Image (cartoon, rainbow, N blue to C red; front, side):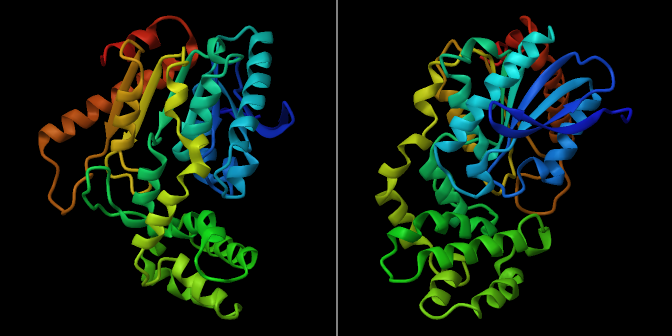
Length: 346
């Protein structure tokens, strides 16, 4: 075992997962809910974060949510997370550790909020940490396709997410094409381009998409390229998503918020190019007025242009980072200090 601990594969209530065990007896524990990503806990960024928590003497459970691994937004992610979280809570209690904190990444905020509000689990958590989460599913998807924020502004956004959005729209397309074949092609382009900053621009991704497109017959080729965001106007697809809103009623986290018992820490980057930070602000406002919550917005470069940050910006960012570190330490330790820190923001 290394100085920072070790990772091993485990079963959590029938859900495949990793557990990161510190070299010394843990002070507390985290359960981390992955975002919508095909690598899940195997994503190097996820793994680095989990190892950092482990090095700070926190046990970390990282369930693999099969729906999210398949790039599908379904209620199955909530079901799996609830099972894994309950099994983790049982193990943590047996070992005499404080109630764990549940930490979610990006679109993992939905199953995390729902699981944390579950009647079986609401009283078993010491804290809920939502990193880059969303409140309004339609608003989040609109940003993913167009870069339009909830207030109608446009900001830089990661257009490499377009194929995943179109995977969910494909069977409602007005065009006739082989849906499973095109969906698999979109999945391939995501695997080839995600996590590569140099491919954020659609023109840079075009050669990868065109190589896959050459294997498809028309009209599949046309549908595939359109879903990759290569030159097509996304507006009709946003309108179609609104028409399909009834399919995604489960994707609204707001009905669960009133049942939360754990204090909530909401963290978001101002320059987040996947989910706009306004979604975190909406989540905070949607919580019951007296529920302990703390909002931390981070990022010195959440604006366009290349001007150096002002001294005041640096000071605010340093203060936000200090509060964030303190909150991440307190969340899995139990007691009233984390609740007090969150309530101080009200």
